[in-house]
Amino acid sequence: MEPLTGLIAARRNEDIALDMMKFIAATTNYGKTVASGAGFHGGTETKSDDYAAQLLELYTRCLATVNGKK
Image (cartoon, rainbow, N blue to C red; front, top):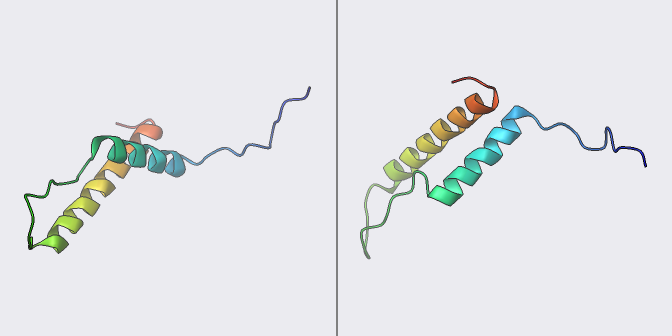
């Protein structure tokens, strides 16, 4: 039986880092804040911006890890 060389494409480091970031964020609730209760909570734009910034930081750290940098 011949090996399946060439059928499975090598994954880019960016794709690996993105999958790593998604796994870490989903399993640890990274960057999510806990709602304090029912009712209106102001500042949702700030919270979503903060969450996006935290995910971007996590992605950058994952990409550096995949690339072998500290």
